[in-house]
Image 1: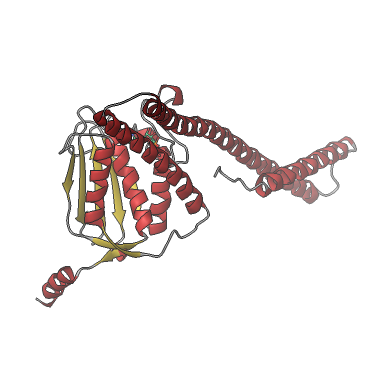
Image 2 (image 1 turned 180 degrees about the horizontal axis):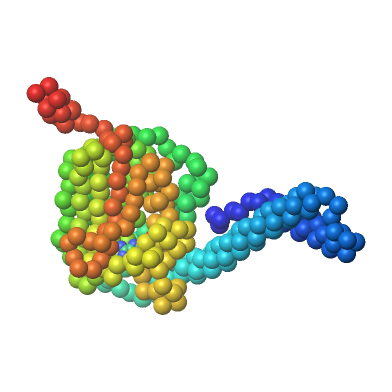
Length: 322
Ligand code: ADP
């Protein structure tokens, strides 16, 4: 699950640096002794030593910079892992605590039929939250091992985006019409589970981080190069430009874990990026078109993924034959 650094690289780098430092020290001692004894007999020898010494020194400097970069990365990762553990603990504890409370109430007290069905609904939501968290963790582990989840199939994007929008709107109890759809018929060849993970995470974030009142738009169109462009935008607080590249990293969440008001683990966009890379698709964050503030996630799928429907290919064929 956690970033698995290969130990080979830092160990090799360390050994090379030590060897270079020893050679540099020997060279320096030889230079000092020879100048004390009256200088070099062959000037060529002196220049060779100097050139060797300088290149060793430059290599040592480069190695030190690489070590520093590795150290900073490791410290950052440690910090993110701590945040991730805090987030997962919170995500596990709160639905379990809520489930426990409802079950205790149902067993110890007499409740009306209305209350009972409301409790069942809340308990279902808690179970779904746990299910989603576990699915995220499993998907991340599977994708990391480069396991193909299953075979590719024809995925109706239009239908998938519509269903996901409905599910997410229901999950966050947003008013009808909050998620606006501007779609075109489009099918792609992809692993269906991967498509669900990719688009569900983006749509889920859009609704979760949307403003008050929440507004989300999902657009799908084909660009001039026949690629499929999917844009999901919201009217939330947005992601600062400097952080836009970083939020795709593993366990990255903007802000401090202790003061964060939305649930999450920082794995969603990592999954989005990993799947997009597998598909040779691009995903980037832009400013929204519909609102003054917010976020737009734009996914561009390569034309090779598109499955032309019979009617579409017939139209293209008749266009070409004209
Ligand atoms: P999380 O589980 O925290 O939502 P993600 O990997 O999905 O994790 O997102 C990483 C971070 O990027 C989030 O914690 C959030 O700070 C930021 N983010 C993602 N999507 C949006 C959005 N639509 N609007 C504002 N911030 C967002």
